[in-house]
Image 1 (tube, helix red, strand yellow):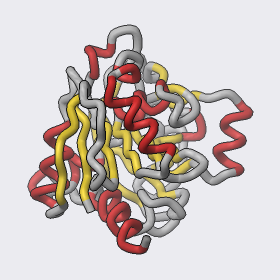
Image 2 (cartoon, helix red, strand yellow):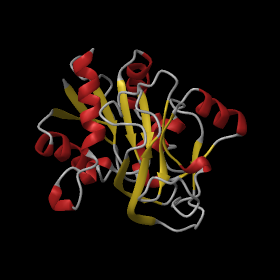
Image 3 (spheres, rainbow, N blue to C red):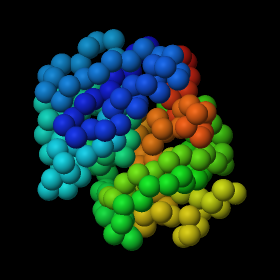
Length: 232
């Protein structure tokens, strides 16, 4: 199995994702350039990394959505390929309409960079298959536009279809207003599409894959992907 990490102008977590996958976890991984117009046939999962693609002009992810590579990513996802969008990658996924809703500016109107706790709400997805419902992960965030918003109809669909994957919580797994770092509706930290092959999450799992960085809970996301692919 093989991962691919897309590089956009302004990406700053592309090499973090590459390092975590290749050196911390030992998986095969390659880069894709934003102007690429093809995706190699041997790619099993594409990662849209964090950063500030195209300087976040207009709004985060709005310009990256029109990169040549995104036409291929959209087609890849529609064929059932796994796509993981992290932070700015999540924003790009909503702009591309691969995921519903939008990421607004944080409720505090400040950039937030800290560790948060995530509660596993759904382990019936390729990205959480190595976890248990109710597990609590500690993962870093670093964003200014991480406030997940959607209308009432979409939120109900997300709940009814069990598309909410992670919610912000306290260290004991309680989903509270105080544990919400950005104002996201329903404390949403990550969602999947209806087919469960596309995940968007604001926290950065790639930053907690090495003990020297202070945590390894991020490994569970990538190990889940591999666990899922090994069962196909």
